[in-house]
Image 1 (tube, rainbow, N blue to C red):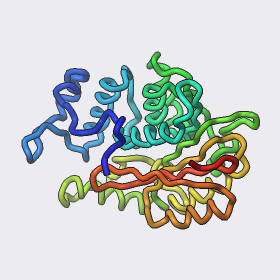
Image 2: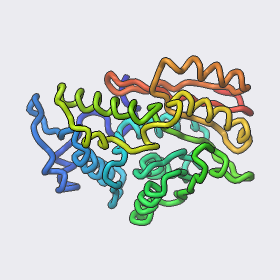
Image 3: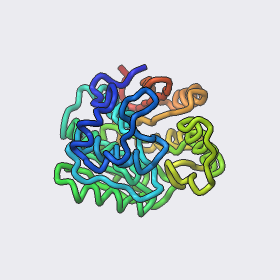
Image 4: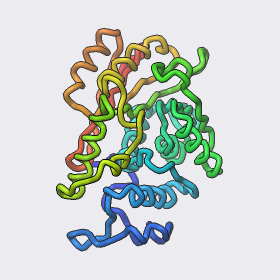
Length: 292
């Protein structure tokens, strides 16, 4: 599968243009084994700087940064989620659309892309105060970002309660849930990622912070349990939300999720996504309207 047709990051990165827009990226650019300009994608600083250049070049974001050790998001994949949600909401446009981003993280990446590409307004929730401060700083330092509100989710067990007011309506919720079920599983996953990027190179334990911290990477019960909790809690907010959506990485858990949605009276649909060999999907559901 390929990236969404409207995704600005289809094809290879134009490092000449990117380094022109952000000269500090140049220090990380080296020829790869094919002789093409690239970066070391296992180097968190290199990937973070690439993100700064992409956001500056394609979304006119003058300031973007995250604290060291926090999750560095892959912008092309994040963009695909937003573009597919735009297709889901095809009858809605621009500033009319209001989105709840569950667990926005320190990067604020989904609200940035949705706001700059489609003019959507966002409620961006977060349980971690350092991540909240980082997200708010990004908003404060970019005048082009409008109608994005960061809200503190004080109870980590709640997903919608405390995030939405009783009389508040959003067109869609988006969520990229923690993938792993434990800190040890997260560490092993990070090691696998680093080894795949570096052909078996051995990494020290101190380097395992690359790619995220704590609640960004793991939650009790993992991705499956988080989504089951999300479905159960969504029933109470059926009238507050047009579409509930969640990104699902593990294909093996999809049948159980669909069964849970059906058992709880929700109508659902699946949007398949992919980039090269990496595949994922968005599961969407609602309670009061027909699915097209």
